[in-house]
Figure 1 (cartoon, rainbow, N blue to C red):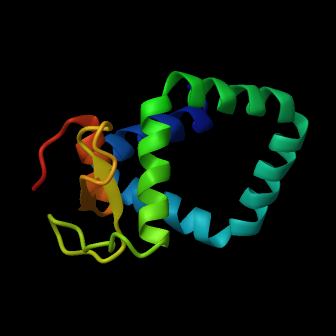
Figure 2: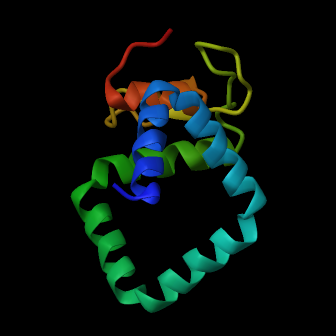
Length: 126
């Protein structure tokens, strides 16, 4: 086993054992390399523009109920008809509207990004 392979195995074990450290490392990388990441995304999109547009159109077609609910929520907040609330689990003021039922677009639970991801996964809140 080469030294690089040993380091990869060690890193994978550490990531599994300490996922919060990996998340912090990734956050630091994104913060320190914001412009590099932005330029890579821009270049990827330009090289794959038609494919990305087709993917986006396909998603919108397959998820019409979600798209309509998100749009309705967005415009309700923008228009001042609905006020963004703090996370109902932890109180974080930076929240997303989580739809339990897309047929009720303005009936949302306000969750921070962490609790929203858990809700989407079907996990329980803390």
